[in-house]
Image (cartoon, rainbow, N blue to C red; front, top):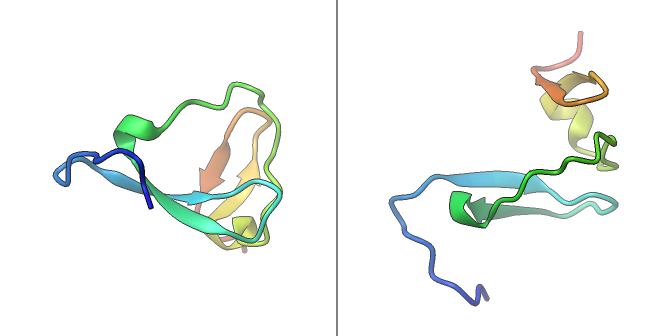
Length: 63
């Protein structure tokens, strides 16, 4: 259970957990940027993104 109570009118994002098969939802106020420029390891990544540029993922389904 979440320790904080983020506003319900704030955007929530689906998050793929790196190195795991888990997914979760996180309120925008609890997100932090990942400045490592490293790809994540998650089995669902190929279903959401076409490729990784070295800096970010490009949304869409691969051909």
